[in-house]
Image (cartoon, rainbow, N blue to C red):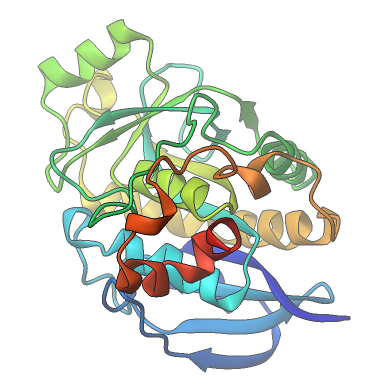
Length: 288
């Protein structure tokens, strides 16, 4: 059994209820960017130490636009996490992606407004690559775990990240479909950007709850509809995450671990000392 906490999991509090999760403890962290959504639940799953975070806080009290994405991801970095599996509800923008299916997207499209999605600034500039926002190795493991669980998996596709908290208008939903988008959600893009800057592998398990309002049978998306499908999918999601954790090798061979190797553009001698201290867990190895 490894004592290192190398795997992070973001989702609803229902993910914590898996019987296999042992040796549980809560850990509250402070970050230079404020408080995360709540304490991290540390436990042992399939012989590996993992850290769970309820994205919207206990009782689902934080709106997507209120989430402190920087604190959430930085907290995982402080714990030593190298991979993040993110589970979240999405609406389907294609007929073939039915409710209770799981999509493992490989692209994002941004329709949010003014969210902070970088650790940099305040005297330190960096420009990291984001052409391929999802770790391909983690995506493969996640999709294989979905298939093994007996759920219908869709490999690849584009997750459109909207601002919310309201759902789409019919005109917006039809436009996104015309653009070729696959699923729609409100949270995962900023997580993916910050995970890349933190050199953490990231994958989304997009749990389809509805067809968004474009579909004649779903022209009025409701919270009750979404929650009912999330509950129905809870056991599958738990099984998928446990299996994905089990399948993950201890060593990473992807490029996520060196995402910042050529990203920092600021001259080292002009970076403010406070910024160096605050971002040491992320950039320290590149500033020595």
